Amino acid sequence: MRVLATSEELRHQVDVARARGDRVGLVPTRGDLHDGHASLLRVAHAQCDLVVCTIVRPDGTPAIHEQADERVAADAGADLLWRPAPGPLVRNAAISVVPTRLPGLADLATAAAQQLGIVRPDVVYAAEEHFDHARLLRDVARDLLLPIEVRVTPTPRDPDGLPLGHASRALDARVRDDAAAIPRALEAIVESVATGERSLFRLRARAEARLAEASAALEVEDVATVDPATFDPVDVFDREVLMVVRATVDGVPIVDSRLLQPTSA
Image (cartoon, rainbow, N blue to C red):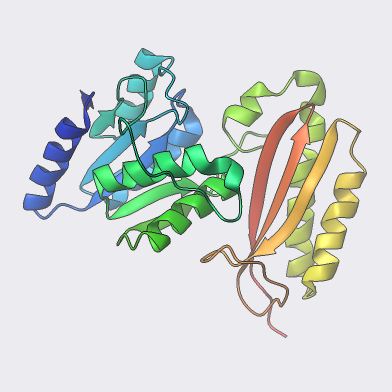
């Protein structure tokens, strides 16, 4: 694996790969890599000829745990690790990207657009539980007319069902079981669908009721059902649907989701 510091180096390596006809996959991260990132990189390695892992912090602060990040990325199959110097990716940028749905994610959207423009991958990978990030990548690619596929992969989980990632690691042991109420509630919804429930209204209400049984440490922000391809809201269960839960547990934000398949009538 090669570690690169400049966008010029990265573009050169990608151009060389494209001249060979290679398929390029991108796994964008903010660093502090963990098993969830490794899972994405392994999927990308299996599906692409050149795998690029980026470590870009939208606020421009330095990356942390550099050596550990390099080990995770290399072991998971990354070919290139791009870790630019602290500061903006584009100096004196005249344009920023402000998402219509979540304007508070402007810095993240701008960094995502710049990374997609620099790497120009065939496929960019996001984990299923990072719903907002996956939707942001898809919106940026679509609205900027970039011929990039956003591929959402299944979420690797800890034994208690929580998605592997920063949120899981940030949870104090005393509230971890409260957080695990989220995957338990989603699994209960999957079971309801398996027994024939077809009303998304009732499924959302059941999820909310299950989550309400948890302690006060769990605060639910939203339970939504969306189209997994477009991330637009869905109210009719006539096709595959993604149920998304946004919550905080003792102040730690957690987003989790499950793909629901309607049963035959």
